[in-house]
Each structure stands twice: as structure tokens, then as C-alpha cells.
Image 1 (cartoon, each protein chain N blue to C red):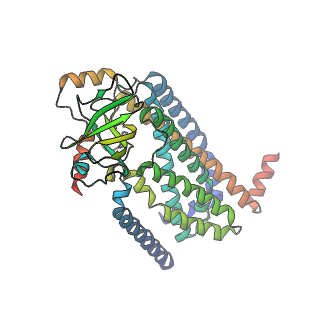
Image 2 (cartoon, rainbow over the protein chains, first blue to last red):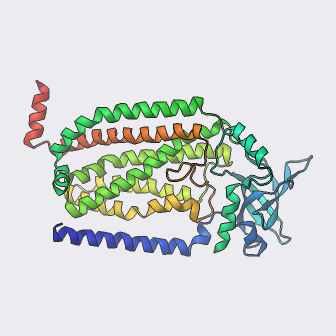
Image 3 (cartoon, each protein chain N blue to C red):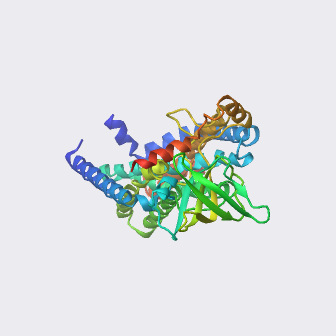
Length: 159
Length: 247
């Protein structure tokens, strides 16, 4: 390769590498702000601010959904299988909302540790399958089948 | 090897090669894309949770793939522009930037349409969606910067630097769903590991992705040929070509 071209190439490699390091450090420093939501362990540990609009994310705990027959009010617990947070919400829930499904709730944490949500979004996982396959999977591994999302929340405890 | 590489830089040589490949790219791309879309949209089984709304994946995922791949290709071409000063590399960047912009927009749009019924919102400022929006702006910036500089050579260099700076965004898009908590789910369509979807959904998706890549190849050749004709309009071979076409 021609020496001038070699020099230009070296400069470019340094440019891109330097930039990558800068952006990497910036996003690392801002990771708490880039994370879309707090997980239940962070909230239970008191890391989430009280009475500030935040998001809480996790799985809807099995058997925890209680609907008020008189109104649109609903209460449920959001869990990551180690800790859970009670959530109260008044409004229409997305179609995918169900026990055992991932959700991201937006709202404020009050002093009693109750998360008062004003918006609930359903979080979908990366698994797509035909209904028959889902049924078969449900039957064969009832209770053991943990959605992959659960592992991810557990992993995110690391930092 | 270097000889072949330098030959690639000759617009005239590229013109001939493109003419030879284009019918195959177009035919192959159309066949694969139509097969993948018809299979995916009409015959693939529906999802156990989302029902039929998941079928937007057959457009969303191929567009998102292309949006990022085109940017990586542009960045490689930008390196060639800056190091080897090859005209053809700049022609490529200029020709495919609007195509990349279109695919990025399509990925964002189909994602929003899917997000409303699935998540309950059109848009959320999570890492994946935001970094993809930055990619849209990068494409827009590349096009705008190119248009704003009249001199061909300085435009080529400025655009190449901008493209290279923006390439840092690509790994962020790809790994955003793994590095941070996002509303967007991790990748379903993976080439390296077992995909997280049933085979009868994955195969049509693969066909659409491959088909769209081939069609992009065709479109890139077409746009590059146009750009070359404009730039080389004063050269002997273009004049001959036009005269031969008139007969």
C-alpha cells in the first residue's frame, strides 16, 4: 500500500476508535438515564426517587391482578422474580397485558411504596410462535417455563 | 488483488458490470421478496399472543436490516473515498443515502404502527427507538451536507467524514436492547444462533430479508449509473454511449 494512503488509513482508524471510546464512555456514564425503567429490585432497595415521574418495568405477577368491578381501576404487582412492587392504575390496559407478561408502567412512587401509574405499556419479548406450539410448550413445561425476559432483569442487577 | 480493486474505481468499467448484474438482481430480489411476503403475510401461522398484528415483522425487520447495512456499506465506501480517493466510492455514498433514509423511515413507521396495538403507544424514548431516530437524522444530514457543497471533491470528503463519525451509532442500535432496559424486545431474527421464532415464520422472514438485499443491490446499481452519467457527461465514453443509444 502507498505510504500516504497508509497514513490516511491510520488517521481514520484513530478517528473512529477515539470517537467510539468517547461515545462509549458517555453512554456508560449516562446508563441510568438511558435505561427506560427501574426494575423492582431497584425500587425495593430504595434507589428509585419517590414522587417523581418514573417508569417501573417487570413481569405482572401471577394471580396478583385485581380489578375493581365498579371502575377501571386495577391493582397488580410487578415482579422480576426476586422483588415485586404493587402498582395501581386507572384506565384501559393494552391488549397484551396479562399475568406473566412484561409491562412498563409510568407513574409516581408514593411514600407507602405503592406505584401509582398513569400509563401502562405492554412489553413484548422476542419469542414468536404459532398458538399450537405455545399450547404444547405450556403443557410440557408447566411452571418451569420462565420467559427469557426474566433472565435479563436478573442480569441487569450486575451493575 | 489490488489491480481488481483499482479497476473497481473506473466508472466505465462499473457501468458495464452493473448492466450485466442488474437483471439478475432485480429478478432474484423480486422472486424472493414476493415469495417471502406472500408466505409471511398470508400463509404463516399467527402468533400465539399478538395474533395477526405480528405480521408487520415481515416488513419491519427487513427494512431495519437494510437501514443499518446500507449505513455500514456507506461507511466502508467513505473509508475508500478518504484513503484511496476513489470517485466510485463517493458515487455509491451519494446514490444510496436516500435509499437508506427511506428504509430507516419505513422501519420507524412500521414499528410505530405495531407499537400502538402491542405496547399501547406509538413512540417511547427508549434506547433502540432513539438510536434509530438518530440514524434517520444521520442519513438526512449526509444528504443535506452533500447538497450544500457545490464542489464535487470537497463534498465527497466532508460527506465521508460525516458518514464515518456516524458509524459509531450502528453498534449502539444493534446492542441497545442488550445493554439497557428498553421497551423494544431483543432481536428475534438472528443469523448466528437459533432464532426465537418458529421455523414457518422464520423462513419467510429470511426470504424477505434476502429479497430486499438483492433489490437494494439493483436499486444501488441503477442510481449509481445515473450519477455516473451525470458526472462523466463530458467524457468520450459517455458521449459514445449516448450516440449509440440514439441510433
